Length: 154
Image 1 (tube, rainbow, N blue to C red):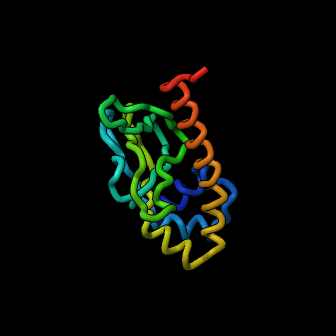
Image 2: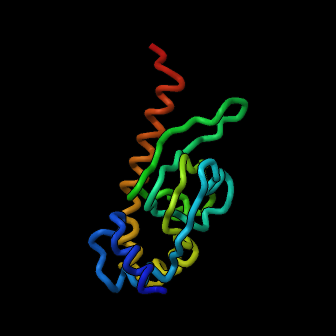
């Protein structure tokens, strides 16, 4: 079965350019997952123990706002990664992620991958190279959404 996951992980654009040994190393932390429309992949405040590489479907990222409706700040689709809080202690989700339609994804066990990154700093560096652009993109999307929600003061 691991050969199948190695192929699936290796073909996902998020891991493009990784050598076969690294893909095999990472694939040991993965599984196939499925979410129905409306189902949450994770909720703000929950432990960030798994992140997802989308293969099919869309996921909306939402910020819960006390006393107001949730604020959607980004939609992820095929080829995207959902979940970056697994990288930063205390490893808790900072927002919700909800399936818009049927989602098929690669679930990555974050505890397993964190350990592998600690054990092999080359793998850790490769993960950071891939996740930092995602973090910057999410920060920018959130900033733009906040400008839209609150408007300008001028």
